[in-house]
Amino acid sequence: MVASLTIFHICQGMNMRVVTCFKAVVPILGLLGFMSAYAGVTRDQDSEPEYVPTGKGWGEYRGPGNHGAAKGAGKPVSSSNGINYHGGPVMLGTTNVYYIWYGDWSGNSATTILPALAGSIGGSPYYNINTTYYDGSNKKISNSVALAGQAYDTTASLGKALSDANVQTIVTNTISSGALPKDPNGVYFVLTTADVNETSGFCTQYCGWHTHTAFQGVEIKYSFVGNPDRCPSSCAIQTTASPNNNVGADGMASIIAHELEEAVTDPVFNGWYDRRGYENADKCAWKFGTTYTTSNGAKANMNMGGLDYMIQQNWVNAGGGYCAVAY
Ligand SMILES: [Zn+2]
Image (tube, rainbow, N blue to C red; front, top):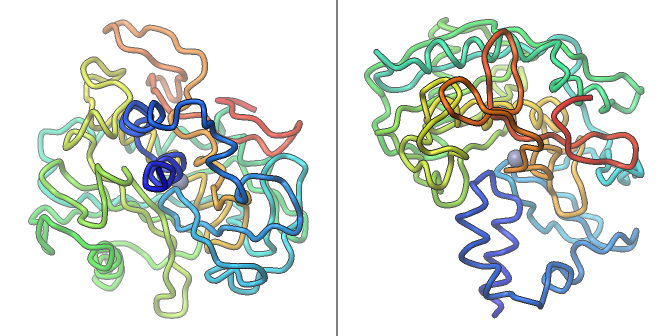
């Protein structure tokens, strides 16, 4: 039973398709229910120890008064919206998205779909949700994103079984080589082809993650986003038809949005997250709201820059807090 509860806990925050978690585990839990499974974790009490984000969609227990990675964090400030501010930075102004295409992406329409996403998500009603988040000086996140650069590692230089450390090296190598600038306002996405695995848990524990590292005097924010074509039943909400006729890329669009909105609101893990260590997008993972049918028969829930997408909801830090596709 303990094992079942643990699995449920992990699955709750994971950026994975719910079917993987809930179909397998919820029936085991049955009427025990969510709250009892979370005894001591989800109850909203100030005396309760907090979990801190890992960037992979689930929190880690750091114990009372010790917030681990949340270096410099003060006592969390409740927003009364189900997510708390922990005193650290958020990403202000225009956020620059950088794509690092890892593996042989030739002939894959992802290379047009995903740049279009990065070029149109800024200014959208969807991304405007992030403007409900602010820093300790009450400066709000901007509804502004730019696709600032793309780089290519077509030979998969570090192989096709990547560790977390490898992903970081891919990013820092790309900066060191001059292929992309060293940008404190950037979020670097390592986008892998379907033949590439990330061995710390891609397809089994997460579909993407974000983190940060100090590199040559700059705090670099970066993210791994795997191709759901490797495991559509785990990482794509639609496994046959998809809005842009590319199940992998359409799945990646939602994962990129998830990691981007977490990176801007919790770039170094002492920004915004809840008592379970769930960041804004974790709280709405695999929730899409109202959908419509596109001309090819797929489902979508938003249009940005002329393309339809099926992108998960994000947590609105206002009005008591709720998942939405627009604000
Ligand atoms: Zn997440």
